[in-house]
Amino acid sequence: METVRSADEIRNWVESWRLENRSVGFVPTMGALHEGHLALVRHASQLADRVVVSIFVNPTQFGAGEDFELYPRSEEQDSELLQEGGCHLLFLPEPSTIYPDGHSTYVEVETPAERLEGEFRPGHFRGVATVVTQLLNLVRPNVAVFGQKDAQQLAVVRRLVRDLHLPVEIASHPTVREPDGLAMSSRNAYLAADERTAASAIYRSLSSARQRIEQGERSAEAIRHVLSEVLEREPLIDIEYAEVVEADTFEPIRRIRGSIVMPVAVRIGTTRLIDNFSLEVDG
Ligand code: AMP
Image (tube, rainbow, N blue to C red; front, side, top):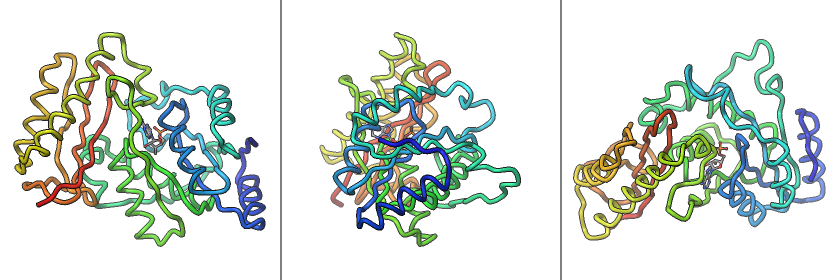
């Protein structure tokens, strides 16, 4: 595995592969890598001949008072994991490559970025859309892989790629979970032991809601109630939202049918966690 930091180096590597007729898969991350990220890398290597992974803790997607400074950074360990995990090229852009002096262009997606994460983290998706657009333009992959763990981000990226005619295929991979169901996340490292135990309620709430839908419940309000009820049983959890939305727009729905997502965001102590289930439901 090679490691590069500059725009010229990444362009040259990818260009050399293109001249050899090799396709390129890309997995953007913020590092502190876990099995979820590595599953995306394996998926990318099934879809393309060469795999590029970027690690960049993107300041513009963090709001004031969020965990940008605290966010776990483990470059050496990440590099070893990627080396073993089938990554060909690790791209570690300098902040000055992504945001040079005088940087003044941002990408703003409206639907599906306005609600939920967009409401609770103002400016978050503007930062995500801006960095993803830049990374796609720097790497120019054939396919980029994103996790369903961040379902709204995936919907935002799909919309951005479609609306801006970016020449890349967007692929996704299911959420990789701990044995008790908690979605793997770099932020799980923040949890104290009792908080970590409490966090498994997120998966239980989503599972209960899915079970009710499978049993025939079609009222979104009833399903929101199931999600909240299970989460509220856990005293360490504060709910930010527990919703049922349409999968492309992330608009709340009344009747459950078609492609839906149940996104949940909670706070446990000072840690904010998100998760979701996506479902295809017959009318
Ligand atoms: P992050 O480093 O948190 O920005 O995540 C980088 C990519 O990994 C995003 O596409 C995430 O959706 C994805 N990802 C994060 N956690 C998981 C997980 N537990 N399972 C699958 N994908 C994940």
